[in-house]
Amino acid sequence: MFSEIVCREWNSIRVRFWSIGYKKRLSLLILLLLLLGCFLVWSSLMVDLSDLKFTQEKDDGVNDSSVWDKWVIANGLRAIGDIYDSCDHNEVRKKIGKIIIHYDPTERRVIGTAVANFTAKVSLKGGVVHVVAQFEGRTLYDVKHNVCKIEAATFGCPMHEGQELSIYEPFKLPRRIPKGNYFATAKLINEDGICLGMTESNINL
Image (cartoon, rainbow, N blue to C red; front, side, top):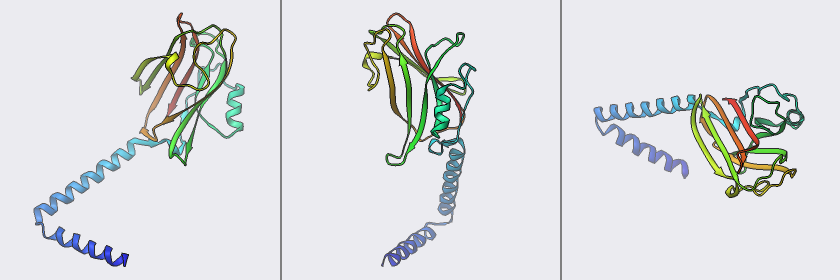
C-alpha cells in the first residue's frame, strides 16, 4: 500500500515537471544544482564538534605535564582548554583544571565542562568574569559578566580568601562551527581588579 502511494506521487511529480516547459525545467535544474553546490561548500567549511576531532594547541610550557593533563589521558577524555590560578602569562602559572568536551547522544548536543580544584587567593565580594573569544585572530566576543549574577552551581560571590572550591560547570556548545583556529579566555576578577584565575582555550578545527 505504501509503495503504491509513493509510486503514484512520484509519477504525479514527474508529469508536472515535464509539463512546465523547457525553460522552466532548465531554470529549476540550475536552481537545484546551485543549492546542492552551496550545501557542499558549506559542508566543507564547517566541522562537526561531535566527531571530537580537533587539536588543542600546546600552552606556554608551564606545568604542561600536570596532574590534570594526566587525568585527561587516564580517563580517555578530550580537552579543549586549561584553567590557571593566574591571568599573567609572564609569571609561573599553576594549572588547576581543564575544559573537557563530550557529545551527549541523548540531548544530541556537544557539552563542554570546566573542571577544577580552586583556592581563592583573595576575597571576592563582587567583580566580573571577562570573556573574550577570537576566531582566526579576530575578536568575536568581548563581554564582562557580573560574577554575582552568573548562573553557576559551584562558584559565585562572595568568596573569602583561602576558600577551597571544586568547580564543575557544564555548558552547551554548537554542534557545527566553521573550521579554523579558536582562542578564548575567561578571567575571574574581583572588585579590586585582582585576577583569581582564568580559563584558556586554543584549538584548531
